[in-house]
Every structure is written in structure tokens, then in C-alpha cells.
Image (cartoon, rainbow, N blue to C red; front, side):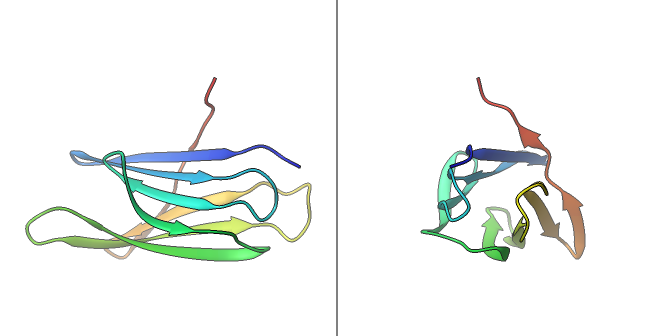
Length: 95
């Protein structure tokens, strides 16, 4: 069944978090500053893209890509694209 995954990056004074539910098709939540701003009820193998906006003046749009590998041994990956730069979001282990 798998476990849930949690990814997080701080961008200036904002926090961006991605929670991916258990299993290969679990739900995905995108949070900015602790508030859910985008939600995908399920996903398949491949890449799921979620869009968000950082609440600044002017607002800064961004994309999050969650890559679910087609083969089980490969790890789930999550990246943030902000201002044209894509960076890996580190996974947080919650206890």
C-alpha cells in the first residue's frame, strides 16, 4: 500500500508543502503557509502538476510537479518551479 510522503521548501517568508497520500494513486495537497491551495483527488504513474501563487505584491505564480515512477523501486520526486527555476523539494519525514 505504501506510505504517505511530505515535501517542503521555504521561499522567502513563505512555506510551500506538498503532501502525497498513501499508495500509488493517493491524493495530493499543495499548501502555502499551512493553507491548502490546490488538491488532486488521485494521481497515476507519471507527472502530476499543481499550480499555486505566493501571496506577494505582485503575486508570484509557481508550479509543483509530483513525479510518480512507473516502476515501484524508484522514489517519488517533487519539484518546485518558481520564477523560471526548477528545484527539488526535499522530503520531510514525519514522526
